[in-house]
Length: 159
Ligand SMILES: [Zn+2]
View 1 (cartoon, rainbow, N blue to C red):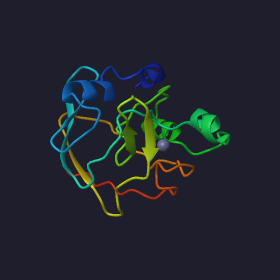
View 2 (cartoon, rainbow, N blue to C red):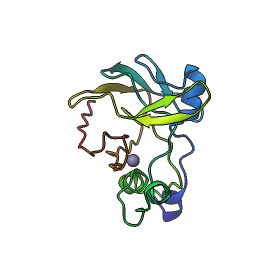
View 3 (tube, helix red, strand yellow):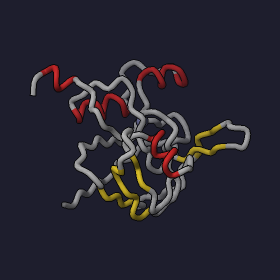
View 4 (cartoon, rainbow, N blue to C red):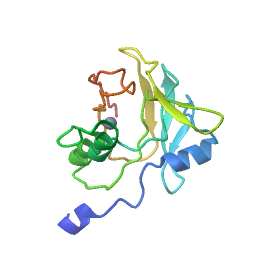
């Protein structure tokens, strides 16, 4: 792989917007499919202990920490962590934010609230295509997003 190829954006990638479109929902529920930008199934959510995930927010990044908390310089963040593990430099990543609890009000306003998940809660996803997957345990401890405290995640991949 050349440097140019390495830095090219993937032609097909997870799309939260298409996932919202195809599932006709701003929420993700067990049985739903997570789609790519080309409207192909990428994952099926087989089971879900919590039933509360966010499809709206982009990955946290230094600029987000600076905007909200004035502490962006050197702050760990999901954008750099995922780009780092994939050896990419995506300018923005719109992930499925598992267990993130975003309340969507009838007037369109949103608020990020304390997660409903408990230690040990899990989701089971089935890949519907070959994927390169970047996963980050979010670094936000300044809000209710992660319950005010970042904690490790466990990932099990079965063939
Ligand atoms: Zn994050």
